[in-house]
Length: 195
Image 1: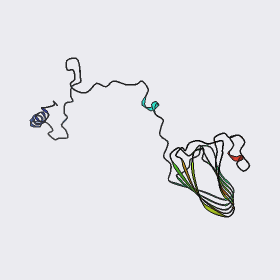
Image 2: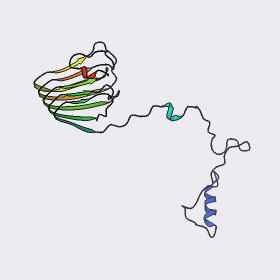
Image 3: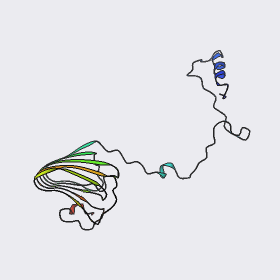
Image 4: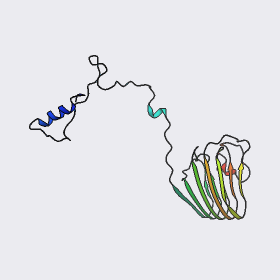
């Protein structure tokens, strides 16, 4: 189809006998490809700008998190370390046992993870990477609620945020900020050591 005669070309095509005259069957003629005889006319020339493939130039986006998850333990401990799949909102229910969650390889900069923990007899311990904002609420009847920061790991905020609501009857709720390799962890946090 030419630039100015497109409508006239369509009318001529519809007037031709013994052809399908519906608009769906009409196939316009594509514009000419630029060449030496028609410089600047038709489709623009595509020139590759870089030899690096598009998929290699940018990192793949992180997979989307599931909205909610539950971790239930009646007689025993719950422990998640390394690169495990955490939901955006996790509910932990524990009757007799400790809950240990290592988020150092899980939480990404700029995202918020929420954990709600209900424990009858046991401790709740969560480890976050340096630069993570931590908001702890809840309480215990016989125990402590503490947030610990490693003075050796003072880094700028990364935008990552942990919102922990911890409720225990007999036990502690503790969140600790620790780097990937802090040497020998203190007592009670040995489970976070890399093996």
